[in-house]
Each structure stands twice: as structure tokens, then as C-alpha cells.
Length: 86
Image 1 (tube, one colour):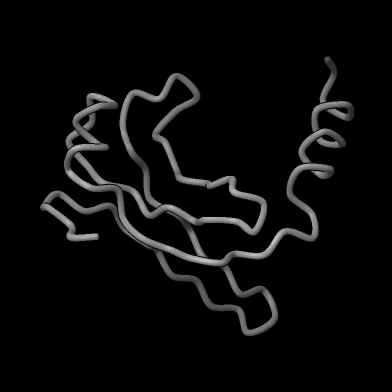
Image 2: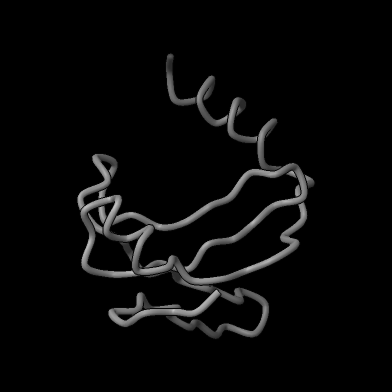
């Protein structure tokens, strides 16, 4: 699959979705992935979820960058290292 086909596939899956909940991974979830960090999880309205990984092999959790191009601001949403109660 080429880049354009991949982008179109992602567009179909993600464009128009709504974030309905956010939370951090629990320690148990991070342990199951073999990670020492707990990423933020974005739950979407179609029962899917997004979370950042350090690479495409899933070697560790990763931070998210929240960019506001209109106001020219940026914020990093970091990972956690401690238990997060759900």
C-alpha cells in the first residue's frame, strides 16, 4: 500500500470521529504492553481508541503534542510513571 492509499484508509477511520473520553493507561495496561510509562488514551465515538507509542513497534508509551496553529501555541501531554486510578 502506498502513502496515499494509507492516508485515505486513515481518513476513513478517523475524520469525523469525536473524542468521547480521555484517561491514562493503568499500571496493569502498561505492564501488559511491557512499558514503564502510561500514555494518554483518547476514546472515540466508534469504540476505538488512540494512544501514543514511542515507535511503530510499540516499544514504549509516548507523549502527545497538542498544537494550536491558529493561536501559535503548543503543549506537550506527557506520559505518567505512576498508578493512575480509573
